[in-house]
Amino acid sequence: MKSKIRIAVGLSGGVDSSVAALLLKRAGYDVFALFMQNWHDTTGTLHGDCEWEEDLSVARMVAKKLDIPFHFVDLSGIYRQKVVDYMFSEYEKGRTPNPDVLCNSEIKFDAFLKCAEELGADYVATGHYCRKAMVRKSTLEEIPVMDGGVPQDLCSGRESGEDIAYRIIAGSDNNKDQTYFLCQLTQQQLSKALFPIGDIVKPEVRRLAAEAGLPSADKKDSQGICFVGKVDLPLFLQQKLAAKDGDVVEIFSNFYDKLEGYPGYGSSRAVEGGQMHVVESEANGLPTREVTYSTGNLNLEGMGSEELDNALDSLSAVYRYKIKDGKKIGRHYGAQFFTIGQRKGLNIGGHKESIFVIDTDIEDNVIYVGEGHHHPGLLRKALKISADEVHWIREDMAMKSGESREYKVRIRYRQPLQDAVLYQRNKYLYIVFKEHQRGISAGQFAVWYDENGEMLGSGVIDL
Image (cartoon, rainbow, N blue to C red; front, top):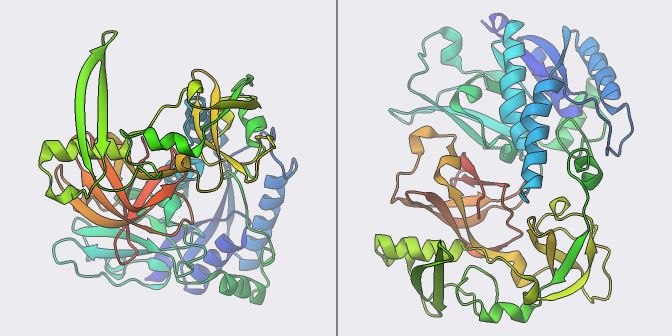
């Protein structure tokens, strides 16, 4: 039965995808390698002009060593359209995108998958450190899998697929879990995906590669933007975004003591609990919203619907700084080149501790900074995601408006999971954390997991 299952391995020239191919070949599947080139331009890259050519050479050697067919596909056109142009657009708006997430959902498990299917593949396998499982939605019964994650029932033709929920679970190697980058995959995409090394830790992957004599055994892990590599980000972005001098304004920690309307910030006054009072009016023909806050014990679960909406709006509200709120301390070369939490590239001295970007004003081209790793402007209690940006991997578990659930959440790759409560309202999904979070950035992805490490959904942070 295995010989009838044809699997395309996305062979990148790295050790992880090489071992994925090795394991599937050993398991007896009909395996072939497919290398994709997604980028030609070397502007702003830091690893030289021919990095992809070296990857291609190693991938060919791995395929030859494993005695599997090798194919090449150039997806650079759609990669620029779906990933790189998206990057430029987001940075231009002052948001911080994650191109690796889009690379997986729009390229590896979409355009690349289609190419693999045209070559006769039933599945696409990658070297991601994560695990795939399946469950029957009607009974919650686990569906057994064969080597490499291929479902037994699908191999025998007994499973219609209509009752299946595909699950994506954290990899066994806690230091390498890559589920975050797959947070926008759909059930259809997961049905065709295999992750053969999800149950293996990195040192074992290296050992298997060396034992098999694979040319990629000692190859360093790739870094930077997916398929582009490590870049000088401002130089890379200047392909489309023009540099423009502007002010750097420092906001001092005591400024937050008077921000009564923003209890989500990590200052002495911005603590969990209290009563919010919302007054809506108009100014210059535009609606305005004034929120006042008094300290005390706040129980979100005990609130009525309208009161809860106001409380969540207040907790997730973002203060928009003005130059008069702080002090001008330097100049920069373009607000769109900086992200919240960034330390490098500011080139401003005279502080005991490092200074960090706490906000950017793209319209007025101003960067706001604060001194110290735990500056209040870096710390937030809550975030929000527009309802139309919420993506449930497990569609059968999607929250309805009015529901709240406790989940584990991360807002960036490799961040330890954080305790939080998700509140689904009509317009937004709100995430309220148990502890203040550092460096929440609009445009990044918030991803939530259950207590067993299953990734259930994600969304683009709107703040």
